[in-house]
Length: 113
Image (cartoon, rainbow, N blue to C red; front, side, top):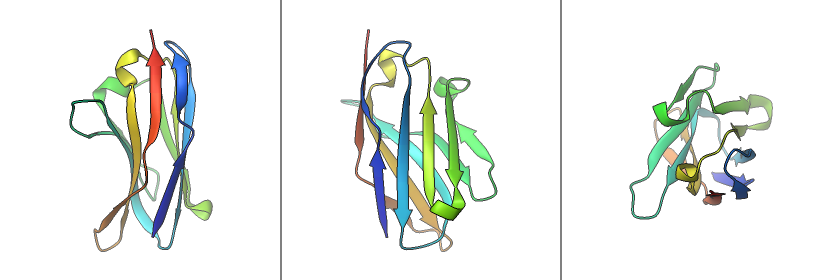
């Protein structure tokens, strides 16, 4: 199983970024984005299951949109109206049907004020 995240970068507050996570090696029922800010624990940002239901952290509701293309085993995170507190390393996670989870490498998102 491999997860490859991309799309991070430096953006000014109010800007937008789109993250992508390409998964391979299995069928993934649940996929999600987590982030970890310096000195803080990793937290769930958003998740999506294979039939399309989504879940968001309160802090990103209305600003972030998670989606996936099952045929491509690819997940996206569209981030708009970014705030400095969105800064962190964003990780993609995917769970297979037996419940085991896998992590991709992180991608840095930095929002300047």
